[in-house]
Figure 1 (cartoon, rainbow, N blue to C red):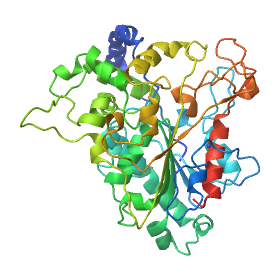
Figure 2 (figure 1 turned 30 degrees about the vertical axis):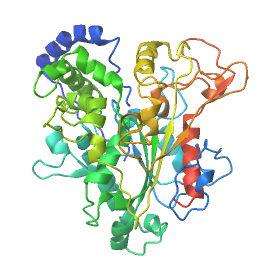
Figure 3 (figure 1 turned 90 degrees about the horizontal axis):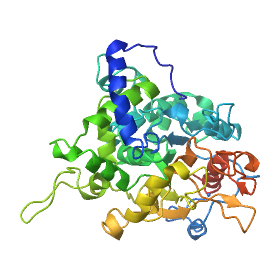
Figure 4 (figure 1 turned 90 degrees about the vertical axis):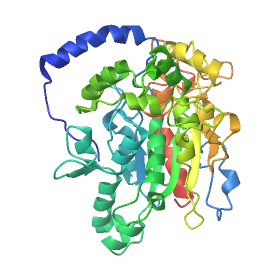
Length: 447
């Protein structure tokens, strides 16, 4: 499901005027707004796995190991990107753009079955979770959510299941002797990045599979979060405060809706006009305090539950799922690959502690549902992930949030890649290598 061609549509002079009007707002917010940023053996095992304790550290190299997993891989892309801009490979072109679908193709070359649905770049967790499950053809969000006349399914897990189970060779890999049996029993290994981890959790918790009639979590074997925005980020709360968004009843800033509508058209060629909801959804207030971000509890008045309270992981004894998270940090914000993210990195350091320039380690790890260890424990086993240095005197500068998607990290291309002409020869990092190591481990453990 490698994306779909978009119609070439001109919005005419009205959009051109809107673009000109929005340009000064882009300049004002440039220091704060990072529009495209939301965007190695597993840690938790099913109770019957005697090797569970062995999978709590870094991933082991995939070299020499099979990537043929029992269940297909489902990649859930981050905020601010479509599927063509997410999970890119290690090879950059003359413009510095990494190869689209590089991760998917590398995994498939080694035998993995991989699906990479396209959602929308900007949307609420609910909208993106529904699109991850099933996306229909159309220009508007109503059409894409299959609520328009004569909907035609074009993407999502729903379509992936239908195609997988209709293929005798594919379904036989899981031991299904019929299409019907496959549609009832097929599972997926979800690998997600940034907001893709939150919307995939929504899909697991809130939706029911139309093929089988079962809750969606029954079709998930494992969930692996890479720098997931699992508790939101304080930078969004900052944006909401700077724009006085929550002075309005809907807690919406028109500037976000305008900018993200234009960005959505540029990225997706879709008319998504409520991108501001994505910003609200990624705030700590929404994720950790209440889905009514304007509500303040007082004596005799309670607030609606937070997103994390409403959408706790299914812990089904009849269907145990492997839940794990991998966290990264920026270690040296002065490094040329990180310098433009210093402002947000320093702000998050003051508010939340170590972070990757967008999301705190606490949010990425996701071992509890609430703030500061409150809200109850999640079933997630948190694991570290880092790049390497060949020189003990030169620690690796760390990884920016979009390392798992499309960003240049020090150490890529055998240390030859550079952000601003700096020498990265002592460092090593491979985006594809991270995914290969993770999938190799899933295969080794029978997922």
